[in-house]
Length: 424
Image 1 (cartoon, helix red, strand yellow):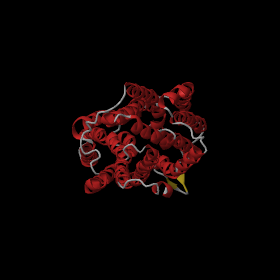
Image 2 (image 1 turned 120 degrees about the horizontal axis):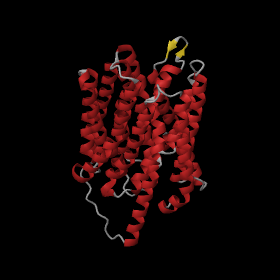
Image 3 (image 1 turned 135 degrees about the vertical axis):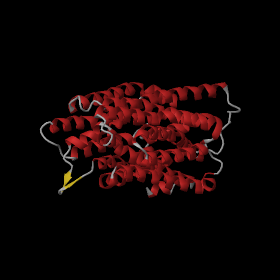
Image 4 (image 1 turned 120 degrees about the vertical axis):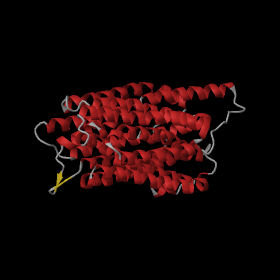
């Protein structure tokens, strides 16, 4: 981490790191409780809860496409970030203290909030670096750690409060976290972000030859093809909030020295591993780069899909063991560890790649397209996770292992063509 911070990044990076940390604290704190709240308080079936969860998390990644368009065309990224923070806090406080009849309305507000926030804060980060592409991968690694600091703390804090004091206090704490991030953002944005993202970009490429424009278009289309391979990744990854949470709740022995570990704590494993491993990955990629052996972004995507299939092989074995009695939490810990390594090979790399290849005047819209694949993946993930009650663990997890491994094989065949087009 220290090596990353010594690379001469603009101070605006650390503001965006801090703001994103608190926004993700609010999102993941709520997400860790959402399915259990629907099942235990609203008395929904696990299938209904899983479907609502999938629709919610899916729309969270669809609306950034709209938020990106509005930022690029009308408002600029910075105003949209402010609106997103306000809507997120409002939705969480309604969820915490409002009547249960407003449950779906609170989710709607948080969906709109993510649409305003998610693609635009990533776009502002890309704008801070202008044409300096060399530091972007490192910058997005630092930024991604901010995401996961928030995601690590929130299930522990919000999950504990939900168990000790009730779900409403877990949701309210998530709302307070968003207010902290919003207050910090409004206090320092003008000083640390300058003009970046303040107004919609009307930049048009000048002095661009037809050949250069054709090359840029080809790279953009290749980027879109690569994005499609993230859909099976997100279908598997987003089981964390549905089927894997229910597996932890009902099929895992959560007692440790006589104390029961709250289910929400398991969702802190992924961000904890991210925080620990991200600096090591950055150093590892740098080491390989110096030896001219670093995998291309496309090859890293392939590694991610392969490792995701491995994580579900672990869960298949865990499910078989759970047929006799509740299993050790070490099974879930191992699966989350492999899943995290997979994530580090795909998610921050993809964000950086979009910021490098997207036309500036469509930067937030293109970033929204990246999150659109998350929408498709998360919606399907919720549908599949909702089958927890009707399928055995083996029947639930085997198709996920097959899906990610098949995607890996197809991408492996396309790697030479995509590398050539993207010039990676």
